[in-house]
Length: 323
Image 1: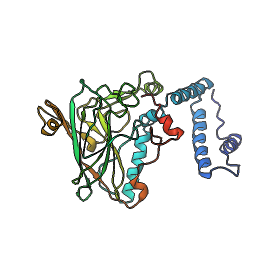
Image 2: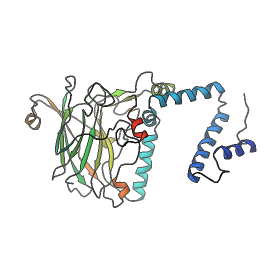
Image 3: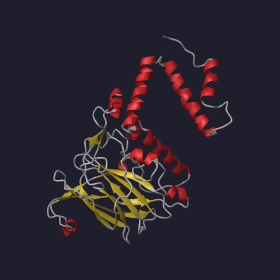
Image 4: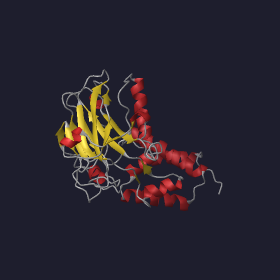
C-alpha cells in the first residue's frame, strides 16, 4: 500500500485534536510535546507503510515491557540515557562548569537505604566464593585538588554472577550496596568482590528488541557511584573494569575512556588483611573530582523512579524490574 495521508489537512487537524491543542485545560508544554511525538509517529507510519499487524505487534511489545518493568532497562539500550548525559555535558560546557569526573548513566538498579558507614565499608554481606576479593578505594576532591571531607559516596554493583541484590531474592537485601561518608582527607575504601559483566534477560522484551536491531544486550563489569557534597555538583557515574570483553562494546553506552579503571592483583594486601582477608586481592583505585556550584538543584541527583526511595507508586514499580 502506497497511501500517503500524513500531510492532509484532515490528519493535521486530527493531530491537534488528539493532542488537546484545541482545548483550554491541561498543560501547554505537555500538549506541545505530545503533538510533536504523535506527529513523528504518524509520519513514520506513513513513510514506512506500517501495517496494522506491525502496529499491534509493537503495542504488544510495549505491554510486555510494562509487565516486567523493563522500560528502564531498554532506555539505556536505545541510547536515551547517554543522550541525556550528552545534553547535560553540553549544558555544563555552556555554563563554563568545567572539570570534574565525567558523568555517565545511572541505570535502573539503584536501591535507596543502603547501610551508611564512615570512611570504610565491607560490602559483601553474602559469601561469593566465585568472585575475586576487591579492595576499592579513592579520594574525593574538588576541581582545585582540595580533599572534600564528609563527601557522600554511594556505591552499588552486582556479584560475580552478574546479579544485583534486592532484585535477586537469593541475596541479602543490601549485599554489595553501601553509602560511605569520606574521612577528613576525602578518602573512602571498601572491601567487596569483583563484579562480573552480564546481559539483559534472555528472551525478555528488551532482548527481543535489541536482537531485532542486530545488537547484543551485554554490559561489561562495572561499579556504580553517586557522589555528593554541599557546594558541589552531584555526580552520577560508574567505572568500567579494564579488560572485559564488552568494556568498549557496552549495550548501554556507558563507557567513557576516563572511567575505564585497571584492577591490580596483589598476592597480599595490607589494608585488606586488617579486615580478615589473607590472600590475593584485586585493588581498584577510583579518585573522584567534583565541580563547584551554588545552584541547589545541581547539588541533588535528578528525579526519577528508584526502588525504595519513596512511598510513591513509581518507586514501588521501579522495585519490580526484571533484570
